[in-house]
Image (cartoon, rainbow, N blue to C red):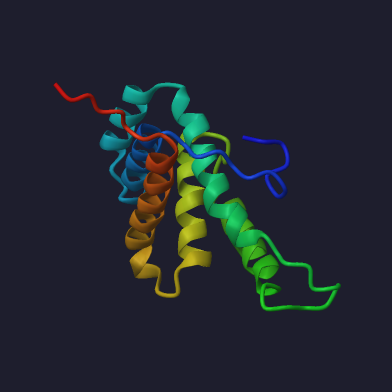
Length: 147
């Protein structure tokens, strides 16, 4: 990831990376530890970077606040909402740097910030995955050869 993700656009992920990361996130979100473990074992240490890439793509567009000349604007609620999210994460005593912590942070951010009805988190995660996959496929088209 670029050092300054506010001014430098994030490079699209590879399609397989999007699929792998969201397979893990969905398994953690569903509480399916066996599947999450199998996915993590199958991907290996690369999963950590993939999850951080997804987190950046979920958090950065939402938390980017337009210049409002120091005045409160429509996006001002984000700071309070993010503060509540961080407090919630701290209360659960989670290690945010590990794979489950990153996946859970993405899920909780989705639940607390991106959804109005907390029951549609899985649907929003599918939408985020579809958007990431579309961007990845556009940036990394599959080259087909005809026989």
